[in-house]
Image (cartoon, rainbow, N blue to C red; front, top):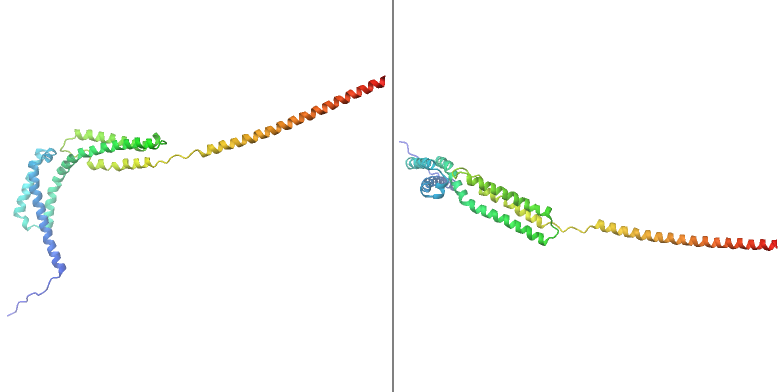
Length: 260
């Protein structure tokens, strides 16, 4: 009679940890599916914010799907693998996530719009304060900010109006994230405006004026010199003329005496 061999192999710590992790992962997948089914069915019946962004037909259809999945979980779920349990949860979240997204957007949208209006108001006040402190700022500088705020306000007004006309159970026209991601551009524009340097004095014009002054002085000196030379010349010409006249008078007198 052959003896039975009993395995005495001791599993390693790594194998034990992997086995335990597999058990934990499956339990987590099972609990996640079970929790989603029961909490979502409860929200469909009692949460006003979710009811507001869904239709009655959609809620009834999704509720049936959740019920069917709950029955499957009670009957076959205990034997299902981790991968199958995750796939089942994915089938539900594909339907439900869109409704929960619309609900969250509807809840967060008023606060996002309020903050957006505040950002614009603060930006406008910052422009006024900067123009008082920095007198060299002009419209070409302040447009760095005002162009951003005007464009943002126009976009927000347009989106808000469209959203009000959009049925609640449809995807939102714009998201809260769309609003918040526009804030940094305005904040950066204000920083850029605050860094506009004071203009330097017009050095070239000053040097030009100084150059003109020096030329004018030199010109005056030259004219004065020329004037002096001219007067000296005139004086010499007068003296020569007088001598010539005296000589002619003396010659006339001599001739008169000779005739006598």
